[in-house]
Image 1: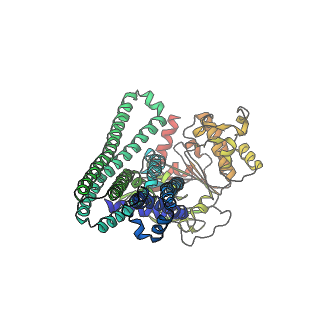
Image 2: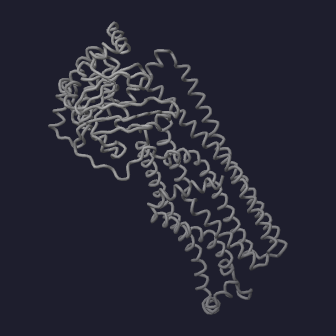
Length: 604
């Protein structure tokens, strides 16, 4: 268990700590000052300074005079000066300790906050760069939980334990060294052996409960991800939940996950809280042993107080270090879930020597012996060989699950082909930078996904830096301009999440305007009008025909009415292209195409 924590700690330290090495070294330095002043300065002050303060003429000279001869001479000549120096020593030690604690607390808090911000940014960047296939296998709520909740949990632990993370282990080691020195200098070897056994006992609850804390923390983090998923699903499908009277069922599901989260979280707290009482029992036992031994060996008060102080700082630092260790164990669940994302291998790496693309490609597309499968052994596309000349409008039709959407999704490299090659303008897309390839594409999907912001900002997403004239021209071409008059601030109207405030047809027009302003040579229309009513579909279809003019266009369609302007149609069935031609040719020669078309004609 410890080696896993060390491995994970080293990994995160290299990735997130090294960029802030100066702050880290300052934290270490101030932590060492605190540790030395606590574990060494205060005990030695009690041992050597207190006897000077309470020294009376005629008594045996304090031990410190044997180590510092000039103090002995000063005591004989000016005893008041030595007393003043002794009295100043205590506030001086605590002043140094207090300043170091203050600086250490600020530095460590800044360091932990910056590390947490870096962690959250890198995790979000990694999620956006991961293949779509990886994200499709994960629940959105779980991924959201990892980015927000798990990183938040890591920040909480870092902030609360950061001060002790460096300070307590150093204090513990300093106190142990001071204790060894005092034991050997006084010849108390037996007491040393007894306290070594007690030190070992003090470490036992940390190790014993640490494993359980780590397991339960991982379960709690997983439960939190499940809880997030349940909430997200219900908010996204609130109409369906209400329409099918599913409220009680969904509440039961939420309650089940919430109860599991509560049980695991309480167990983490129970194990964490058990460590401190056990270590305090061991500490009091060690002090009791010292008390008995000091009485039997006629130990002087200053030596006893010094050793008791060392033991106090030793076991107190062990207690705090143990608590820190167990809180870190509690963070292992979130850290493991974060690490899983950060270390996820890239199955679609960028080429080492990418082909430099022209500013605007022609848009010629070619599939050569392409096979594709989402899961090994379950092919979705089989032996696809097709050439699409630049500027051609091609419809993709077939039954649900035939492979047409997958075919279109390979072109922007949302997925990599399993075998074969996909070429654009004669260049394998795996030899292009993904960003360069996607700059040559525009996509209009079934659901027009708009972002929070103004209508202008949503249109301009198609081309960052687009001029006002280009944005207005795109709005005109997509028939966005007519409905802007009904908006409070026209094109500068702010939209809610997902484009709330606009109708489905209006959102689709904004998405089309985004494609217009991008002016890419390749256009993919994936069921772009499937969610619209017949009247809205007719209106949008006119804009789509204007948009596809002069571009290589792929139209994924269930409604044949969207293929009126297609120059060519590819018919898919069970992952194969079984027919290729114009509407007239396919209707005359393909029974499946005729059946699909006639069936829809009857419905319409």
